[in-house]
Amino acid sequence: MSTPTRERDELTGQASGPFRFASPATKRRMLIIVNPYATTVSDRLRHLVVYALQGRFEVDAVDTEARGHAIELCREAAHEGYDVVVAFGGDGTVNEAANGLLGSPTPLCCLPGGSANVFAKMLGIPGDVVDATEHLLAMADDWRPRKVDLGVVNGRCFTFASGLGLDASVVERVDAHPRMKARLGPYFFMWMALSTLLRRYLLSPPRMQVQARGETFDGVTAIVQNGPPFTYFQDRPIEIVEGAALDSGALAGGVLHRATPLSMTGIAWRAFSPRARVGAHRQVTGLANLREMVVRSADERPLPLEVDGDYLGEVTEARYSIMPRALNVIS
Image 1 (cartoon, helix red, strand yellow):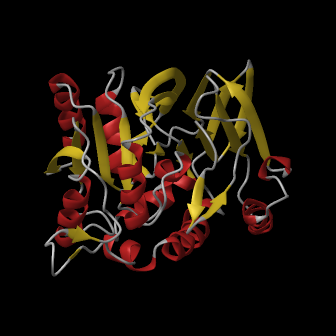
Image 2: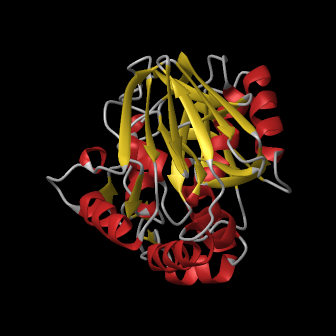
Image 3: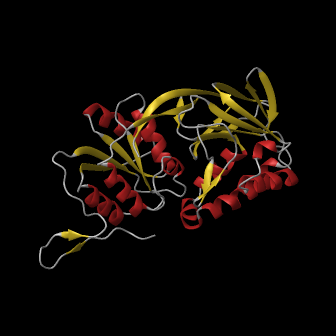
């Protein structure tokens, strides 16, 4: 990955390079919340990004120190009247920032620092940090905040997706190996997905019941999305459920009824296909236009839960709802 550079002109002593912009009369206040442990974040890159953004914004930057710290920092930033908060990290950092800014007028923006950066890409922010920094600089002259929906599960908001079952079990195992996650990226996810399927979900997986729109569905995995796509394989979108949009006022869901080698092969092919639909598979039921959905354990075994690619633990019940236009974003 390339990193931003600035060179000094030998005659003028002025900076030149990709981040050369005229300084505005009044700079907006920007707080950058940095996850120093994110996949692609380093001290050098952090300093370069902050230095570049100072050309158009009054920038403060602070590192997160523990899980949940970004939520507290964003609440303080909204209270102190920052014009924008930028989450520089992976989707977990973005999720915490969104929960911290919930209901406030302060908009959220993102810089890619994780392995997937799903929400940033959904907002139209480039996946390369140099391009994304230039994008944020140009944003100073095209300042148009907008409102998007947030999904909610058991009181925790999510920006793009949540899952129970196989999906969450994969996230749990991937998060347990951060070095491999950083080194291999989406290929490590694929390996963990196959390994988890073979170990936990072929013979006796935890069973669940999904209640939505007055119906009950049995399954082994449930996916809920606030917008498309479900995730990315590098820069390629992976579509799972249909009918969700960040400003639709509704969620979309999908239930996997059984996980067999044949069915999972077909579902994986559909997920990567530009034309085939996962929801058309006979082992999947798609649920569009959801305001509420409840997932419960059907065999008293707890269900693994993830939100925005961050493992939250095991639950016996998950209650989903939608918060329309709850988050201000700018991109």
